[in-house]
Image (cartoon, rainbow, N blue to C red; front, top):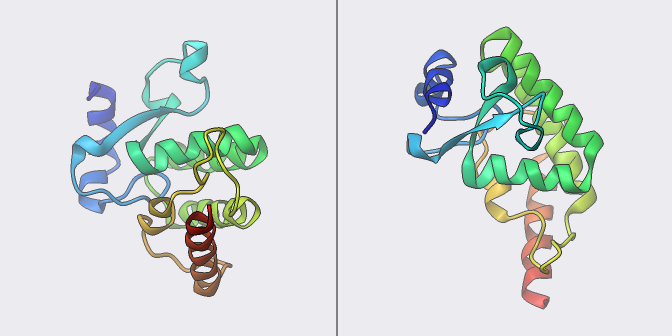
Length: 156
């Protein structure tokens, strides 16, 4: 794990909170990774606090890059909320609620989408491993989306 990631985990109290910048839960610190916010890694963006966030590698980080490949506008809006958290120096509940609304909007629009290899775009753990928040969307929608995902996966 990079030193900057360790520093950010400490500064944002992430180990105690048990969730990342997007509100994804984790059990072990080694699950966390650094995500470039403003200048992407592919453009040689620096691994610095002002340019980064800490995400759970196999859920939040992977999911965010899938969102980026399908819907750049939603990706930009989520990134903007993480930048705001970074500026505030804390994981803020209002930012997390906005992020959750954006994720659920994406899920509503891409619920049955597939990757280029034919796998579901939205894995079940992308929905299940988030902290509980009250947002504009209802629990019924989440249940419907998960059921649709499972039924669609079983059929194909």
